[in-house]
Amino acid sequence: MNNKIEQFWNSLYSRGISSKKELVREMIRIKLTEDPIENSDLHQKDITADQLYDIMKNITEAELGDFPEDRDFFQEIYRLAKEIDLQVFTIQTYKHDRMGTMIAPIHLTDYMEELIEQQGVNTVLITDAEKSLIGLKKNIEKSKHIQFTLTSENKMTFLLLKLIFKRFDNTCVKHQSIYKKLLMPERFDLVLCLPVFGVKFDQEEVSNKYMTRESEGIAVENLLEVIDHHGKLFVIVPARFTFSGGGFEQIRHEIMTQYSLESIYTLPEGTFRPYTGIKTYMLGIANEAVLNVKLGHLALEEETFKLKDQKKIPKTEFNKYSDWRVELFLSKNQDDLQKFKQSAVQKIKLKDIADIFRGKSVMKKDIQPGKIHILNISNIEDGHIVFEHMDTIDEEERKIKRYELLEHDLVITCRGTINKVAVYKGSQKCVIASANIMVIRFKEAVMSDYVKIFMESPLGRTMIKSFQRGSTVMNINPKDIGEMEVPIANLAEQKAIVAEYLHENKLYIETIKKAEQRWAIQQQEIFEKILK
Image (cartoon, rainbow, N blue to C red; front, side, top):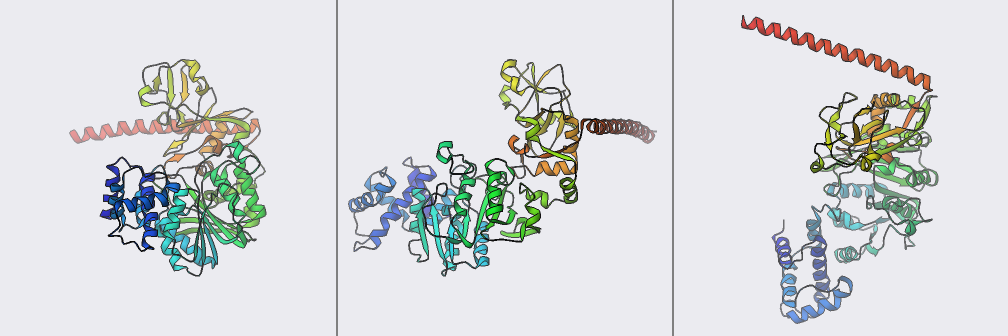
């Protein structure tokens, strides 16, 4: 790391200026002040602290607010910042930011460069361009024949981009939010977007304007309107965009009917850590017809994205699906999936036949002797609930009533590293689910054991996994799992299948138990022979 950057940080830290936003703001203030001085008759060495301070106030305070310290301190950090590159400083400052600005890794920016080269375009729009700072300047320098438009919704990052690209004739920076109707008449050959994930806008703000309140959905709707006749939009979205119902389902339908989904690629696990660990996809959307939809995984090899397991699905076939869960199309259980889709058996979404909710969040400090027993992941073994060693809490039953398990509730893990399913058969104890467990409570004539059997099958596990929002650590939302289709036979068939399953499972357990007992006896006899 540049020692000057550390010195600059430390100088500001000493005055209580410590947040990343404040650090970047003061560097922008200095660079804004520096620009007119460089283009004037003033000499850097001769300028006084008073002159420097007055120039800074006149140029920056309307945009950035008052400088929080005195003129001598400003002169000190101004001189310190002379040799610091603004782009490098910003990247280093936000490098390990877990809460604020997301900076895309260099391999993603390089992949975007490949997209620009492959498409053979003349105009490119890069939205929220501050997220692509690593490698962006290099990419634009290499493509002098292309006209770039960069946007940022934040005033400070808009000024940042203006400063970094002020000498680039082929680059225009606009103060524009992609989460509102775009105020630009241009249409672009290529649009690259890494939106904010998971921000919900007020209903009044988006009512009757957009199909969803979610930031990534609104961004896609707005950007589809600015791609040219032969243009394309490449946008990175979280997993739920590909399978959630409601507004996201409407957007997917709009893309398939009014535009063309050209490609969906999964991004490697941890691409945006430490900012987020959620599973993400890159969608390619074209403004003209395509024959096939390309699916695949972008794998990270030697700091470069490589496309793996690419598969083409005819658009006519892909259109039969209401969601875009890539994992299903690329699954080893593809034959079973096709049979399931094409079979005559009735299929119903869980949300249409059950209430689905997550259990109660219980802190470690709340665990104590009490009458309320907690069902956690460790209490589910081999498809059965084990009541021994359950944690307990001391709480009034009326306060936990909504989480109390009822007989025949289907429970499924929604966090952790392994998927477990079980049916609650009832107990004299009061048992509630923890926040690591989802409860599926059927409203109609559906046997919980029947659905459990399906969920335990290779096909069922593949389908459950496709709803994970997390990458390595499982994270499934109750609303998402509600979109899962399950086969529903008539009640007589369900009973017959469940009875056969339970009978065979009982034989299996008894056989294992007998084998373990026999092995224990044989082991002991062998050990005794050694001692003779």
